[in-house]
Length: 118
Ligand SMILES: [Zn+2]
Image (cartoon, rainbow, N blue to C red):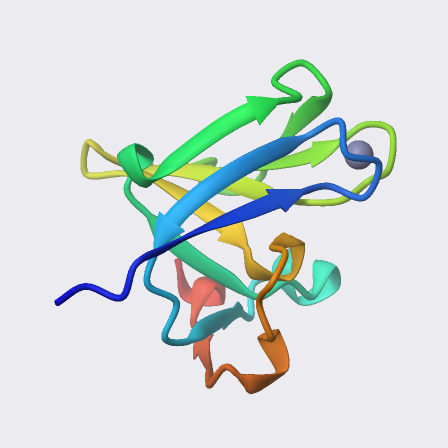
């Protein structure tokens, strides 16, 4: 049985709004040079589990290094609500769990994701 739930998420100024339907049983903290600065808690989901409701043009796309990851952030409030990456032809959405409503992120078990080595 799946424990997937639909969560509403947004950036701070609410121009970027989305829904994600997934089971959240933990979070990842990435140790790469940008994520360690942003300090977000993430979870990757297939694109079909993610629905952008608004804000497609409110974000800018920052890339560096291998450029496999699209670090999107709202140009008004600066929040990284989600990102995208394509690895081996498979696209994933990386959601910032701190941007979701009705989720106790402090209760989640956090694992380090070794993005620094990618
Ligand atoms: Zn914003």
